Image (cartoon, rainbow, N blue to C red; front, side):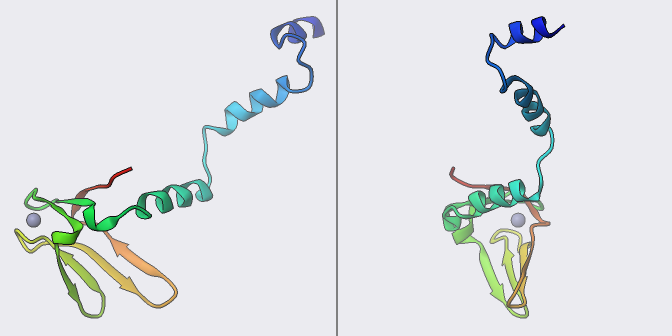
Length: 108
Ligand SMILES: [Zn+2]
């Protein structure tokens, strides 16, 4: 019984069992993995990122959209005036609503 297990791993004792467990862990990521991903995405130059408007389909660099500042910040589509992004900050947290953005295209 023990002989077959040893044969599979070519006598590399000790590491065989942990390799199997590692494969299982890849199926689920925790919140830290997502946070790292988001940080990578939004650390890029956002002014050249391209937003596609869900309402009219126009694609414009973030630097070209219309920005309105009031209680929060609203990014509006320069073509149809749709509110693409709404941002509200209370000093400790920021809420970002991308509801009317079909896609956000960034350089990687
Ligand atoms: Zn639009």
